[in-house]
Image (cartoon, rainbow, N blue to C red; front, side):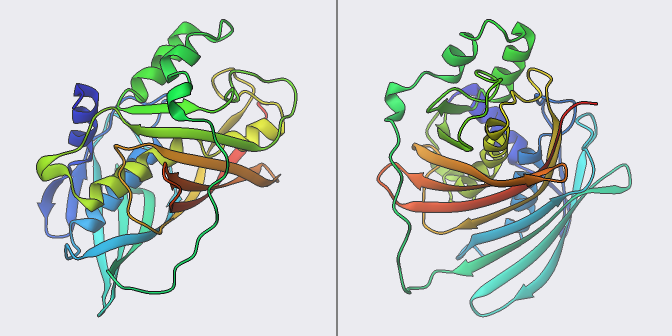
Length: 291
Protein backbone atom coordinates (compact mmCIF):
# COMPACT_ATOMS: atom_id res chain seq x y z
CA UNK A 1 0.00 0.00 0.00
CA UNK A 2 1.35 3.44 -0.92
CA UNK A 3 1.95 6.03 1.79
CA UNK A 4 -0.50 8.33 0.02
CA UNK A 5 -3.22 5.70 0.24
CA UNK A 6 -2.45 5.05 3.90
CA UNK A 7 -2.73 8.79 4.55
CA UNK A 8 -6.13 8.82 2.85
CA UNK A 9 -7.32 5.86 4.93
CA UNK A 10 -6.16 7.67 8.07
CA UNK A 11 -8.10 10.75 6.94
CA UNK A 12 -11.27 8.67 6.62
CA UNK A 13 -10.80 6.88 9.97
CA UNK A 14 -12.85 9.21 12.18
CA UNK A 15 -12.37 9.65 15.91
CA UNK A 16 -15.46 8.80 17.96
CA UNK A 17 -15.83 11.41 20.69
CA UNK A 18 -19.28 10.42 22.00
CA UNK A 19 -22.10 8.11 21.03
CA UNK A 20 -23.27 9.20 17.56
CA UNK A 21 -20.63 11.98 17.43
CA UNK A 22 -17.41 11.76 15.41
CA UNK A 23 -14.56 14.09 14.53
CA UNK A 24 -12.54 14.29 11.36
CA UNK A 25 -9.75 16.41 9.94
CA UNK A 26 -8.95 17.65 6.44
CA UNK A 27 -6.11 17.54 3.97
CA UNK A 28 -4.94 19.95 1.28
CA UNK A 29 -7.33 20.31 -1.66
CA UNK A 30 -6.98 21.83 -5.11
CA UNK A 31 -9.18 24.74 -3.98
CA UNK A 32 -8.94 26.70 -0.69
CA UNK A 33 -11.77 24.84 1.01
CA UNK A 34 -12.50 21.31 2.18
CA UNK A 35 -12.81 18.94 -0.78
CA UNK A 36 -16.46 17.93 -1.13
CA UNK A 37 -15.63 14.28 -1.71
CA UNK A 38 -13.78 14.22 1.59
CA UNK A 39 -16.65 15.55 3.69
CA UNK A 40 -19.13 13.25 1.90
CA UNK A 41 -16.91 10.22 2.49
CA UNK A 42 -16.32 11.09 6.15
CA UNK A 43 -20.05 11.63 6.72
CA UNK A 44 -20.74 8.20 5.23
CA UNK A 45 -18.11 6.69 7.55
CA UNK A 46 -19.88 8.31 10.52
CA UNK A 47 -23.23 6.90 9.42
CA UNK A 48 -21.78 3.45 8.75
CA UNK A 49 -20.18 3.25 12.20
CA UNK A 50 -23.70 3.22 13.72
CA UNK A 51 -25.13 0.50 11.45
CA UNK A 52 -25.00 -3.31 11.88
CA UNK A 53 -22.27 -4.92 9.77
CA UNK A 54 -24.75 -7.01 7.79
CA UNK A 55 -26.35 -3.87 6.30
CA UNK A 56 -24.57 -2.32 3.34
CA UNK A 57 -24.91 1.25 2.08
CA UNK A 58 -27.23 1.38 -0.93
CA UNK A 59 -27.84 5.13 -1.30
CA UNK A 60 -26.89 8.58 -0.09
CA UNK A 61 -28.31 12.04 -0.68
CA UNK A 62 -26.37 15.10 0.41
CA UNK A 63 -26.24 18.90 0.34
CA UNK A 64 -23.15 21.09 0.49
CA UNK A 65 -24.24 23.99 2.70
CA UNK A 66 -21.11 26.08 3.32
CA UNK A 67 -17.45 25.93 2.25
CA UNK A 68 -15.47 23.90 4.78
CA UNK A 69 -12.44 25.30 6.56
CA UNK A 70 -9.51 22.90 5.91
CA UNK A 71 -7.70 24.19 9.00
CA UNK A 72 -10.42 23.22 11.50
CA UNK A 73 -11.80 19.85 12.67
CA UNK A 74 -15.20 18.73 11.38
CA UNK A 75 -17.69 17.30 13.86
CA UNK A 76 -20.20 14.77 12.50
CA UNK A 77 -23.40 14.10 14.44
CA UNK A 78 -25.46 11.05 13.48
CA UNK A 79 -29.24 10.86 13.84
CA UNK A 80 -30.46 7.24 13.93
CA UNK A 81 -33.62 7.84 11.93
CA UNK A 82 -34.81 4.27 11.49
CA UNK A 83 -33.81 0.65 12.07
CA UNK A 84 -36.22 -1.60 10.19
CA UNK A 85 -36.19 -5.29 9.41
CA UNK A 86 -34.48 -4.76 6.05
CA UNK A 87 -33.38 -1.13 5.92
CA UNK A 88 -31.54 1.27 8.20
CA UNK A 89 -31.58 5.06 7.71
CA UNK A 90 -29.17 7.62 9.10
CA UNK A 91 -28.89 11.38 8.88
CA UNK A 92 -25.52 13.10 9.38
CA UNK A 93 -24.75 16.78 9.95
CA UNK A 94 -21.19 18.06 9.55
CA UNK A 95 -20.42 21.13 11.68
CA UNK A 96 -17.54 23.61 11.82
CA UNK A 97 -17.31 26.78 13.89
CA UNK A 98 -20.83 26.16 15.19
CA UNK A 99 -22.41 26.07 11.72
CA UNK A 100 -23.51 23.17 9.50
CA UNK A 101 -21.40 22.83 6.35
CA UNK A 102 -22.83 19.57 4.97
CA UNK A 103 -25.88 17.34 5.44
CA UNK A 104 -26.20 13.71 4.38
CA UNK A 105 -28.92 11.09 4.50
CA UNK A 106 -27.87 7.49 3.88
CA UNK A 107 -29.73 4.20 3.71
CA UNK A 108 -28.37 0.71 4.35
CA UNK A 109 -29.93 -2.65 3.47
CA UNK A 110 -29.52 -6.24 4.56
CA UNK A 111 -28.59 -8.52 1.63
CA UNK A 112 -31.61 -9.67 -0.32
CA UNK A 113 -32.21 -11.60 -3.54
CA UNK A 114 -34.43 -9.99 -6.19
CA UNK A 115 -34.94 -8.97 -9.82
CA UNK A 116 -31.72 -8.14 -11.64
CA UNK A 117 -31.04 -6.12 -14.79
CA UNK A 118 -28.70 -3.29 -15.74
CA UNK A 119 -27.74 -0.85 -18.47
CA UNK A 120 -24.90 -2.13 -20.64
CA UNK A 121 -21.41 -0.82 -20.07
CA UNK A 122 -20.40 1.71 -22.76
CA UNK A 123 -17.32 1.29 -24.91
CA UNK A 124 -14.19 2.67 -23.28
CA UNK A 125 -10.44 2.38 -23.85
CA UNK A 126 -8.42 -0.03 -21.73
CA UNK A 127 -7.10 1.91 -18.71
CA UNK A 128 -3.67 0.35 -19.17
CA UNK A 129 -3.37 2.22 -22.50
CA UNK A 130 -4.13 5.65 -21.01
CA UNK A 131 -1.63 8.16 -19.59
CA UNK A 132 -1.45 8.57 -15.84
CA UNK A 133 -2.57 11.84 -14.27
CA UNK A 134 1.06 12.89 -13.83
CA UNK A 135 1.94 12.19 -17.46
CA UNK A 136 -1.16 13.95 -18.79
CA UNK A 137 -1.04 17.01 -16.53
CA UNK A 138 2.68 17.61 -16.95
CA UNK A 139 2.19 17.48 -20.71
CA UNK A 140 0.06 20.65 -20.77
CA UNK A 141 2.38 23.64 -21.21
CA UNK A 142 -0.44 26.15 -20.66
CA UNK A 143 -1.06 25.05 -17.06
CA UNK A 144 0.67 26.74 -14.14
CA UNK A 145 3.14 24.16 -12.76
CA UNK A 146 2.00 25.02 -9.23
CA UNK A 147 -1.59 24.14 -10.20
CA UNK A 148 -0.42 20.86 -11.70
CA UNK A 149 1.40 19.90 -8.51
CA UNK A 150 -1.65 20.78 -6.38
CA UNK A 151 -3.78 18.52 -8.57
CA UNK A 152 -1.33 15.66 -8.29
CA UNK A 153 -0.86 16.05 -4.55
CA UNK A 154 -4.61 16.06 -3.93
CA UNK A 155 -5.08 12.92 -6.03
CA UNK A 156 -1.91 10.98 -5.21
CA UNK A 157 -3.85 8.16 -3.47
CA UNK A 158 -5.98 7.62 -6.59
CA UNK A 159 -4.82 6.40 -10.00
CA UNK A 160 -7.17 8.47 -12.17
CA UNK A 161 -6.94 8.28 -15.97
CA UNK A 162 -9.00 10.31 -18.46
CA UNK A 163 -10.05 8.60 -21.68
CA UNK A 164 -9.73 11.96 -23.48
CA UNK A 165 -8.42 15.43 -22.72
CA UNK A 166 -10.00 16.83 -19.54
CA UNK A 167 -11.60 20.30 -19.72
CA UNK A 168 -8.45 22.09 -18.55
CA UNK A 169 -6.35 20.27 -21.12
CA UNK A 170 -8.26 21.26 -24.25
CA UNK A 171 -10.71 24.14 -24.15
CA UNK A 172 -12.03 27.10 -26.17
CA UNK A 173 -14.47 25.14 -28.33
CA UNK A 174 -17.56 23.23 -27.09
CA UNK A 175 -17.28 19.45 -27.04
CA UNK A 176 -19.74 16.66 -26.43
CA UNK A 177 -20.86 16.87 -22.77
CA UNK A 178 -19.49 13.41 -22.03
CA UNK A 179 -16.40 12.35 -20.11
CA UNK A 180 -14.91 8.99 -19.15
CA UNK A 181 -12.43 8.39 -16.35
CA UNK A 182 -10.96 5.15 -15.04
CA UNK A 183 -9.95 5.12 -11.38
CA UNK A 184 -8.67 2.88 -8.60
CA UNK A 185 -6.63 3.33 -5.44
CA UNK A 186 -2.85 3.35 -5.76
CA UNK A 187 -2.53 0.18 -3.69
CA UNK A 188 -4.45 -2.91 -2.69
CA UNK A 189 -6.70 -2.96 0.37
CA UNK A 190 -6.18 -5.92 2.65
CA UNK A 191 -6.49 -7.06 6.23
CA UNK A 192 -8.73 -5.30 8.72
CA UNK A 193 -9.40 -2.32 6.43
CA UNK A 194 -10.70 -4.49 3.58
CA UNK A 195 -14.40 -4.17 4.35
CA UNK A 196 -17.36 -3.33 2.07
CA UNK A 197 -18.02 0.08 3.66
CA UNK A 198 -14.50 1.29 2.92
CA UNK A 199 -14.82 0.53 -0.80
CA UNK A 200 -18.09 2.47 -0.91
CA UNK A 201 -16.54 5.35 1.04
CA UNK A 202 -13.55 5.54 -1.32
CA UNK A 203 -15.82 5.59 -4.37
CA UNK A 204 -17.78 8.40 -2.71
CA UNK A 205 -14.54 10.31 -2.18
CA UNK A 206 -13.54 10.01 -5.85
CA UNK A 207 -17.03 10.69 -7.22
CA UNK A 208 -16.74 14.43 -6.53
CA UNK A 209 -13.47 14.87 -8.42
CA UNK A 210 -14.65 14.93 -12.04
CA UNK A 211 -18.45 14.77 -12.24
CA UNK A 212 -18.93 18.40 -13.31
CA UNK A 213 -16.35 18.07 -16.12
CA UNK A 214 -19.01 17.26 -18.71
CA UNK A 215 -20.71 20.62 -18.04
CA UNK A 216 -17.47 22.44 -18.80
CA UNK A 217 -16.95 20.42 -21.98
CA UNK A 218 -20.34 21.49 -23.33
CA UNK A 219 -19.28 25.14 -23.14
CA UNK A 220 -15.62 24.88 -24.05
CA UNK A 221 -14.49 25.91 -20.57
CA UNK A 222 -11.34 24.73 -18.86
CA UNK A 223 -12.50 25.22 -15.28
CA UNK A 224 -10.89 26.77 -12.22
CA UNK A 225 -7.44 25.49 -13.25
CA UNK A 226 -7.37 28.03 -16.10
CA UNK A 227 -9.60 30.61 -14.42
CA UNK A 228 -12.52 30.68 -16.85
CA UNK A 229 -15.14 29.25 -14.46
CA UNK A 230 -16.07 29.60 -10.81
CA UNK A 231 -18.20 26.96 -9.15
CA UNK A 232 -18.91 24.56 -6.33
CA UNK A 233 -20.93 21.42 -5.68
CA UNK A 234 -24.48 21.98 -4.47
CA UNK A 235 -25.85 18.49 -3.91
CA UNK A 236 -24.81 14.90 -4.52
CA UNK A 237 -26.64 11.59 -4.74
CA UNK A 238 -25.36 8.04 -5.17
CA UNK A 239 -26.96 4.61 -5.45
CA UNK A 240 -24.79 1.54 -4.85
CA UNK A 241 -26.14 -1.34 -6.94
CA UNK A 242 -23.59 -4.16 -6.92
CA UNK A 243 -20.43 -5.08 -5.02
CA UNK A 244 -17.17 -3.61 -6.27
CA UNK A 245 -13.63 -2.99 -5.14
CA UNK A 246 -12.13 0.51 -5.08
CA UNK A 247 -8.64 -0.99 -5.58
CA UNK A 248 -9.67 -2.43 -8.96
CA UNK A 249 -10.38 -0.41 -12.10
CA UNK A 250 -13.75 1.35 -12.21
CA UNK A 251 -15.09 3.23 -15.24
CA UNK A 252 -16.73 6.57 -14.39
CA UNK A 253 -18.93 7.38 -17.41
CA UNK A 254 -20.21 10.97 -17.00
CA UNK A 255 -22.48 13.32 -18.94
CA UNK A 256 -24.39 16.56 -18.50
CA UNK A 257 -28.01 16.74 -19.68
CA UNK A 258 -28.56 20.38 -18.66
CA UNK A 259 -27.05 23.67 -17.51
CA UNK A 260 -29.01 26.85 -16.80
CA UNK A 261 -29.48 29.57 -14.18
CA UNK A 262 -25.88 29.39 -12.99
CA UNK A 263 -26.26 25.66 -12.24
CA UNK A 264 -25.20 22.56 -14.13
CA UNK A 265 -26.20 18.92 -13.74
CA UNK A 266 -23.86 15.98 -14.03
CA UNK A 267 -24.98 12.36 -14.05
CA UNK A 268 -22.90 9.23 -14.27
CA UNK A 269 -22.65 5.47 -14.01
CA UNK A 270 -19.71 3.60 -12.54
CA UNK A 271 -18.89 0.13 -13.91
CA UNK A 272 -16.47 -2.56 -12.88
CA UNK A 273 -13.94 -3.53 -15.52
CA UNK A 274 -15.89 -6.71 -16.28
CA UNK A 275 -19.04 -4.70 -17.07
CA UNK A 276 -21.16 -4.76 -13.89
CA UNK A 277 -23.05 -1.55 -13.11
CA UNK A 278 -21.84 -0.73 -9.60
CA UNK A 279 -23.00 2.84 -8.87
CA UNK A 280 -25.22 5.60 -10.25
CA UNK A 281 -24.34 9.22 -9.42
CA UNK A 282 -26.05 12.60 -9.89
CA UNK A 283 -24.68 15.98 -8.83
CA UNK A 284 -25.68 19.60 -9.39
CA UNK A 285 -23.20 22.41 -9.02
CA UNK A 286 -22.84 26.15 -9.37
CA UNK A 287 -21.07 26.83 -12.66
CA UNK A 288 -20.57 30.48 -13.58
CA UNK A 289 -18.33 32.56 -15.78
CA UNK A 290 -16.09 34.84 -13.69
CA UNK A 291 -17.39 38.40 -13.32
